[in-house]
Every structure is written in C-alpha cells, then in structure tokens.
Image 1: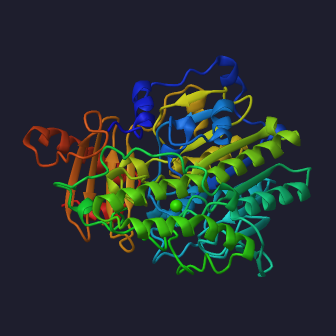
Image 2 (image 1 turned 45 degrees about the vertical axis):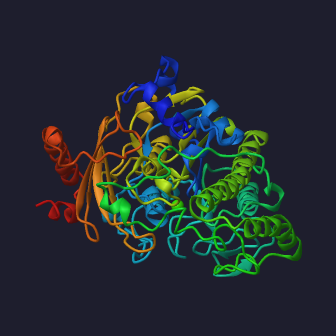
Image 3 (image 1 turned 90 degrees about the horizontal axis):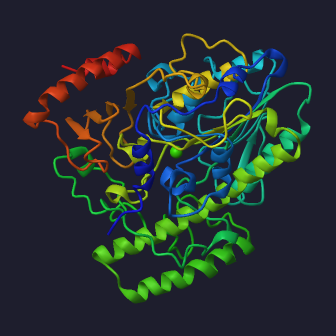
Length: 516
Ligand code: CA
C-alpha cells in the first residue's frame, strides 16, 4: 500500500535542502523593525501536532484550512526541527533560545525550570511590550516576564479544565479547552493597553494524548479508512533503541485510556469531570463502537489496525478544533485591524508519530518527531506563499521575536533569527544538532545526534548503547541503519567530526564526555 505519509517529505525533497526561497527586493528592504512601528507578536504553540496532519504540509489525512491561511499569508518552514522532542523542554527552548543543557530543563520527569533566567519575554517586556502567556505552559507554576498569565496546571484537561491565575487562584471553567484558551486570549487582547505593542503566547493543549475531540467533532472521520504508513510494521532490525521502546500502537496504546473504550473513567479523570451533556455525547458516540469491538473479537494485527483507525479518528478530530481555533485567533486580528502589524507564528512543541514505525508519541530523532510544523506570517516582511527549506529550529524563535521587535539578541541565545533567511540571505546553519534526555515513560533511550542535508547520525546512550546512521535520500523512512557498514565508514567518521564540532559549538559537555 502506498503511504500518503511521505507526501510532505516528497514536497520538501522536491524543493531541495538549501534552495533559498525567492524573496523580492522590496520585501528585503522593508524587513527590520523600527522602534516607531514595532510589530505585535502572537505565537500559537500547539502540543504534539504532527506536520503529517496539516494540509499545508501536503497531508491528505485532513484539511486544516486555518493553519493553511498562515502558509498562504506568509512562510511555511519545510524543515523546522526541535532540539529535544518533548513537551516541557521544547517550551523552555522556545522561551530561552537555548538548548536544554543551557536552560536546565532537560526532561519532563526530573527537571525544574528556573523562571529567573533570561527569556525573550523578559527582554520584550523590558523594551515596553505587554506580554502574556495563556493556556498550556507545562514549566511549573512560576512565570516571569509576563504581564499576564493564565495557564493549565501541568497537562490540563480537555473538558472543563482548571486554570491557574497570577493571583494564585485556581478556577475550573466550563467548556472545551481549545475554545476556552482562545477565548481567554481574546479577552486579554480586548483589555490590553492599546498604547503599547503586545506579545501573546497562546499555548494549546491539543493535540496531546489522549486526543479527546470536542463533542461537536465526534465522528467526523468515521467514513474515512486511513492507509497504514508503509513502515507501520517496522521490525526494528539492527535498531535496538527502536526495538525496546514502549510507544507502539500495538502494545502500548490502551483501549480504555487512549481509545475511550471505557465504561466509566480513565486515570486522568477526563470522563468524570465532564458535565452531563458532554458525558452523554461521549457515551452516545463511543459505547456503540465499544460494543461492536467486543462483538467482533478482533485480535492480533486486526486489532492493531483497528486501534490505528480509532487513533487517527480521535487525533484528527481533536486537531479539527485546534485548527478552527487558530482561525478564530486570525479572525480576531483581522477584524480588529491588527493583522497588518502583527507577526503570527504557528508551531507545535514537536512532531508526533501517526503510525510511522508502528508508533504514537514522540522523543526519537527520527523525522516525524524531530521535525515540527512552523509557519509564520508578517505582512510586509514575509511575502505570501513562501516555502522555505532552510534547516531552522525552535531555538530560533526567541532571537526572531527579539529582532522583529528591534531588541538586541543576547549572545547567550544559541538560535539565529529567521528574518535574514526570509530576506533571502543564506541560512546560518547547515547541520542540525539534537539531544534528548528523558528515560522514563515510553522507554526511549537518551540520545544525541546530527542531521545534515543527506545523512543522520544518532548516538544512543544510557539504556541502549548504540549508533545509527541513515541515508535520508535513499531511506526517508529511516529503516536501514548503515552504521558499521564498511562502505559507510568514511561518511560515519566525517559525520562524527561534524557532530563533535556542533557539540563544542553548543557547549554540551555531557555529550562530549560520551564520545570516547
Ligand atoms: Ca508535546
């Protein structure tokens, strides 16, 4: 079966790594913000939203008309990467413009985010911006650099979520989380000081596990049979770290917790906190599916493929509300005359597996979770409909926002502003460095590595000690580990040199110590 999952990769491949975007001179000349006309900034950060599920990225799984609007109005980054593919650490990188080993937040399980450190928010605030973070934050309950914040505690809930407020209060709000976060953002925009520019971060919970759709969206993909990714039945040959993971649809994904085949509740209390109407809508939808599953007696591959279909339907239905709410934020900016002078960024905290390698979740340096959607509109500064294939990172967002606001970028930030690339200048990075630390849920061994235009070299350590090498041109699905094959010895040793050079550049002592 031909996979539709590679259409985005194919698109990017056709464009070619390093093929600079066509940028007209007038745009180049108008770029750079004077203090008199500083842009507003809106950064929408979703959670676990895969580029494979965004139509602007070539997805055929669903349409995302509102995220696609940003692509039409501005730029789609076809090769945007994260430094560490997991929720909290990715937000820490976003705020600080520094790798995890520099900002101190390496993993969700045993790191503490020091909110006292430097961040783009603090610098924008000091430069006269009004700053706000609304929605999922996932870096504790202490925020600095924000004039206003209203966050979900931890992961938060999809239905009738609690919010934490600046005055220390905690309040449960009736409704669906994506709508509530968007509404809170609009309320803040309504009440802001209109004399000052603003920087608003909207942190969405969607599409994080357990992918609970808004009741209005239940069943929207029931008529669709999703094709299995071509490497769905990956056997992880010669790839020990991939073999020992615990994030497969077949064995890790739970019928009750994940796929809602529950009579009463899940461990997160997602079901019990629903109001009677929400609960009735869920029961009306899921109970017949559960009865049909029980009646069918599916097992083995048949059950696994049934789980994949249910996963896709829940995930994509949850994404539908997310996309609608992105549209609502764009509508607000347009209706209030703000769109012309506002830089809008849409990104996820990382990518996600939609069945590739048989998986859900993230963490690995393989493309689906290493890459993140990243789109940006900034009228007058980014020409509409641009596709950039420059290798960029979430590390670059903080410097980008500072440059747009005319605020100097501190040398301690490790990213590079994206604006020069959008002015048609060559990118400052040819090789991307990654380091993942957590070894807990889902049993993914810590690893670090680099991706060049053609190759990827990964060093797993801790639980699994191994190297992996991929030729992405020949093997975009990353199934054939070439490390240790004699004809790749020279390539491997050249890549190791590049790896060491980036480790030194980013001053990652822990990684350096692990290389002989
Ligand atoms: Ca995430």
